[in-house]
Length: 372
Image 1: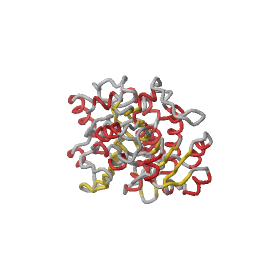
Image 2: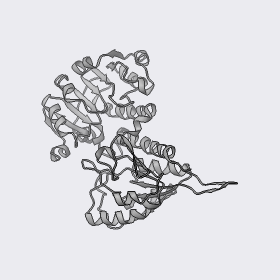
Image 3: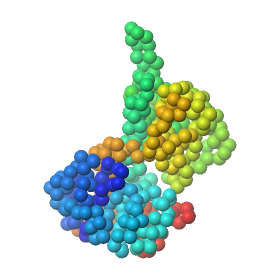
Image 4: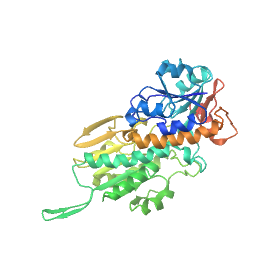
C-alpha cells in the first residue's frame, strides 16, 4: 500500500512528522511525502528520507497513492486526479463542503473527516478538534497580550499602580478552557460565558468567574458540542454579556455550532462600548464569527478596537500542532490498517463509521446527507 502525505496550502502544519511516518514504514507501508511538506513545521525533506519515506511530486501522490493524508480539502481539480478507490483522511468540514463531498463520492473516493469523529472516551486519542483547539486557545491569549497596549498582570510600582487586564472568554470548550488557564497564568482577571451550565465548575476551578444565563437549551445529548439556542435565550445572553463586554480589555470568542453559522454574540452596539485599545480575537471567524465586523483571516481596527479573525491559530505553532495532529492520525489509522500494513474498513466500529463521509460512490454520513 502507498500512503501519501501532502504539502498543505496556506498552512504550516503537516499531517505526519518524520518520526510518525516511520511508524508506518515499519509496517511495510510505502510512504510518499510531497516535496517540502514538512519544511514549515521544521521537518525538512531529508528528515523524511532518513525515516524511509520517499519524496514525490504532488501530482504523483494524487494519482497513485492508495491513502492520502491532507489536513484541508482538496480542490475540485485535484479531486479529478485521484485514482478510483483511494482513501482520503483529513479535516474537511463536510457539513460546509457538501458539493466537494459529492464530487469525491462520484470518483469512488472513501473520505474520512476527522472533525466528525464521535466525542467518546475511546475516541479522545483521535480527537483532532480538541488537540488543535488546545493550541489555539493558548495562542489566542498570547496574541492578545502582544496586541494589547496594556499589561495583563497587576503591577505596583513607584510610578503608580497598574490594574490587571479584564479578559472575557466566550465558550468554555477546549480552546476556551486553555485560554482561561493561559490568561490566568499571565495575571488577568477572567470572566467566562458558555451556554452549558455544566462547565461552570471547571471554569471556576481555573480561577475565572462564570457568567450565568438561565434557560439554555439542553446540550447533554450533543456529544460535547454546543447546540442552537432560542431567540429568547440569545436576547438574555446578550443583555448579560453587554456589561462584561463594556469593561473588558480583551475578548476571546470560540463559540461554534457544528454545521451551522457561528452565533453572533457581540453586536455593533456592544462592540462600540469597549474602550479604544481593546483587543478581540475571534476563533469562530471561519464560520461567520461571533463578533460584529469580524473578517476571517484578517486583523482590522474598529473605532480603536483591534479585531483579529482567525480560526486556524494552531497552524502558527506548527511543530507541536503537527506532532499532536499526527498522533491523532496514527491512532485513527490503527483502526483501518492492519499490523501487516493492509487496509481494512470495519464499519461496525462506531469511530470508523462516524467519521466516514463517502464510500462506495455515495455520501454515507447521515449528518452530511441531512445538511443538503
